[in-house]
Length: 103
Image (cartoon, rainbow, N blue to C red; front, side):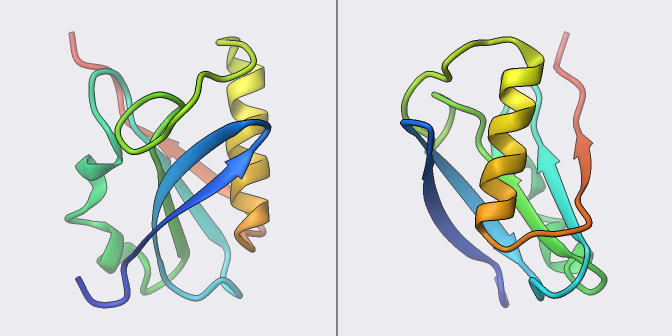
């Protein structure tokens, strides 16, 4: 697993589980999963991506290792939650990539 780390962060009453790798001084790549998956779908690529970026893969609220419902399920609320979490972990120049949901 190299420099990949598991961590959690509390933002707005929600505890978000996160896998991270790479140098926080580099531009950040935030990986978000679709339903019904968790951040573990990115386990095989986080190390390779961290050669060029600070990579963060979050479990969305109440999925995987994350605990607590978000204040709202509206996409702009979830986006703000994820951006705030990434910035709290030192991310800057953030690019977000997401997987498609199954089905």
